[in-house]
Length: 380
Image 1 (spheres, rainbow, N blue to C red):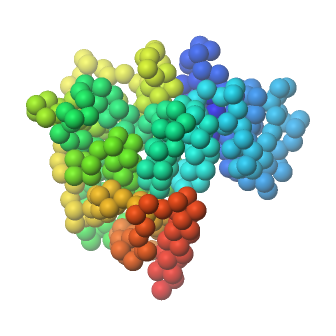
Image 2: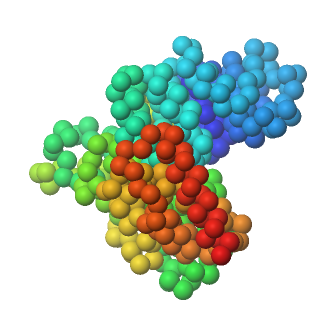
């Protein structure tokens, strides 16, 4: 196993799954950007062949003497690209946060690896290109996001031509019942208090704006080859039903589990087999209530942006993702209001120079353009 982003929330959960696997999963490579202290501690516990620190300045803090015998240090994204291609790597867990995860995921797909994909931005930015590459190289892409893992499991109940629609569920985040006026005054601290999931700061804000559902709609469009008009979103505050697939005969297949990322992680690591694991289980001796409601488009306009980007395709996903990353940073830094996040993303998406089938270089240029546009908007 190569675990990219091993010090983040998905990465640490992945290592819990590996630790509980009784030797079935063996870490060959652990990688982080700047969190060297946590990475070295993970190396001491798991003794991988390599650790990779992407940031050169942070890597200078690591001494060879800090590492256990047999573990070597590599530095920079180029080294990471080379190591994920190693014949010693069977599966790559892509859990680097944000657009930064595209490069190493591309390298893994190009090498024909089995990729456990937690970095949704890869599919949002370059979904068609990545899927074409996987078809050429024989790589397999298995989703780690709980929603897409649920869809992957439910789709095994019927053929592609039998799917009526796919519904991704959303917790609604901490602001599910807040008024428009209250949302405008929401603080970063309030937005970071998620009611059901423990996640990193950026994705927690995305959950609060429901931009995570927008990005997941785009990811599902390309990962499963489903037209945008067959994709929808339901708010489900218990976070027990992770997604639903409706088939043409009216049957609806849903995947349920307590909110615990270790289950979809293990599913991606062990697929096509299922194995015992450390994920939480239901206590069926207690009553369980399930609620569903449509998202409010007025209070959560990000969902509409996701539908638009999934429908238009091309460069829309890359631009929406970049604008959102920069807008979330601006909100966390106190530069814009919570409700400004979706507004600025809509403005940048509307004004960007659309390209129907951009190359990777063009995607990178549009990513940089969108970020700069947000900076201009924030500074006005």
